[in-house]
Image 1 (cartoon, rainbow, N blue to C red):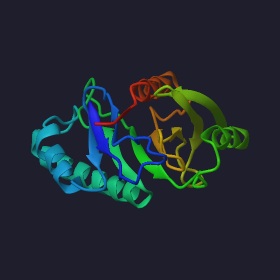
Image 2 (cartoon, rainbow, N blue to C red):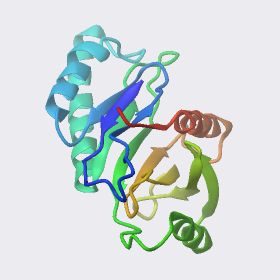
Image 3 (cartoon, rainbow, N blue to C red):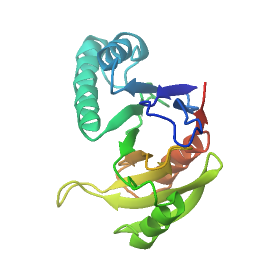
Image 4 (cartoon, one colour):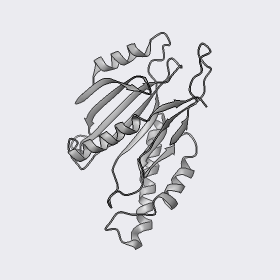
Length: 215
């Protein structure tokens, strides 16, 4: 079970807002907090979680591999933090001798700040706006309406297409506050392959475990 604290604000209309969210992660996946404790989490990954290396890498190169992974993780964490990220999740153990190229970020979103706009109207507007090269649909997350966007994206022209899935979720009992869960993977190099679809299905299964905690 992954738990992450939410920044606290005064409750609205004396209705308790959640203190955190919770997710059930697949085996081999970890959480890197982005607001505090990031350095400690990375140290734990480097010296504990990454005791294994992909097949084909000589034992003498294991530490070099881990240090390179540390550099890449730090880069991802910094980028996610700059974009309002709360937590970064990714697999750190190989499956079948290979590392999965995938990750997702939970972040706060600067939308719906007008408390008078019901979340349903915000979601309907986002669905109507759609998403280039993909689809936007209203779904249920933790027993409440949310948005799911599934699309393909490349950072720069000519780069490999990446499969992306975003969930946009209103914070329960806290009007005007939203979070997003943003998944990204190049899959096996084909954004529409069966392998890539399996990774998307895995992410959707993780989101299906999402719940708010009021403890």
